[in-house]
Image 1: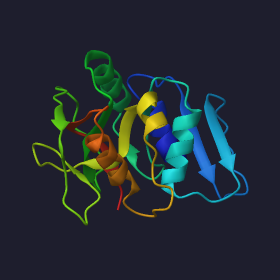
Image 2: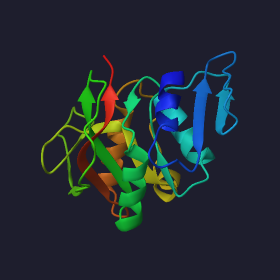
Image 3: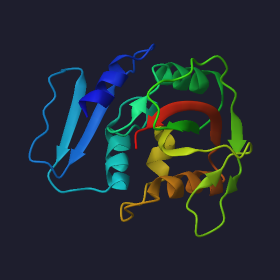
Image 4: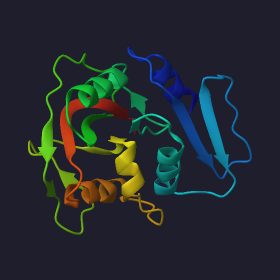
Length: 185
């Protein structure tokens, strides 16, 4: 967890708020007073933790991250710029696998997601057909209030959530090919 938090602290644009939703642990301490840690005794799956994070966040846009992945140092800057300059409700992005370095962000091209992958897949498809990181998505609080993550799924809940946005008549999901997260294998 400390590594992901250090990635957040090294952002080129400071996040408005940092929340950690922890469940099933006896305690989770954090020495940094700017990080709000919410501890829930009963173990939650990722969908439950994301729903709690969406409820507890005070900002207009919530950006989800996992504690075991490396975050691009410009991710917060990119997310803020896209949401401020575009009329969008939610955003997903591309990712690296197993790398520790990132390319600098130069362009913030986005495209509207209009397709979901056919069953049994739980994912959505980018118009460019490039990979999508469903778990590290960002969404406006309004979306998170109206559409909830499935709390009974141990895998695929992020894709199902993104599918729900695409299938809704009220909200739009966009994609950027920027690789804003490194999954560590």
